[in-house]
Image 1 (cartoon, rainbow, N blue to C red):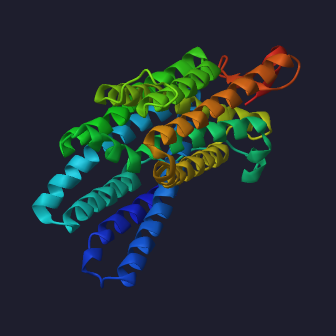
Image 2 (image 1 turned 180 degrees about the vertical axis):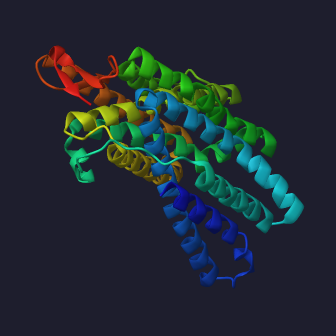
Length: 360
């Protein structure tokens, strides 16, 4: 799946570069949708398989390695527009797609040649993916993922018009947009380390969602904070908070979902990693779809300030859900609510409340 996803995604990316030569009108639109849809299928397989592979190779450091992957993603998001702009100026519409598609295919060849066979645990017990949805804790994690993805993608279509009020140049607006992904990429491995090595899973989730919610209140700024002026430095502070604490709200979720899966009977193997990865990416992408659409509608109806406040409310709701789940676990010391997955002497056991243990 990993190699196939690379080749499908790279081929479609390169193919997209010739679509400017297609007939205009509905034909062009249909071909664009078809090409991007197939590319999305390939990249979905690539992302799902990549997380499953790294989880299988580094089972004790899942959150840390996921943080490193997010750093690579953040770097790509920062340099991608700049590289694409240069290539567009040099060779027109097609060159950025030919170049990046070719590079993706080249990485697929290298992976196919040098990536070793993935060794999974023998005699694995197959589990249906929908069984993962029977865990309340997984639903809490899904709410957190959805809130984070919806919130950060809300700024894609709405922040630029808001920044135009400050009469900024296009380059300065672009720099403001790079603040959050840059800080997210820098801090993601740190939060993964704190989750894996220190066990601060619940604390990170609660703090991350709470601070992100406050960041969205500043972004407007919210009418509920009338003492704050509508100035550029407020936006910069808000984007900095979102970048610094988005990883705090997202990175631990992966470890939590794996732990919850083990608690309801899933084995600690490649199948489970793939199911968890697929669910994570599905919810994240759904939030990435809802955020821009909902953001555009809200800004048109109630204005940017109030729209950002409603997004903040979503972050606070996910914070409340996580805190309520944590409190519920504390209220029943003899139940089997999952706390933090720890590895003791390589046995791969999960620490549960009340001193109980469950093999993960």
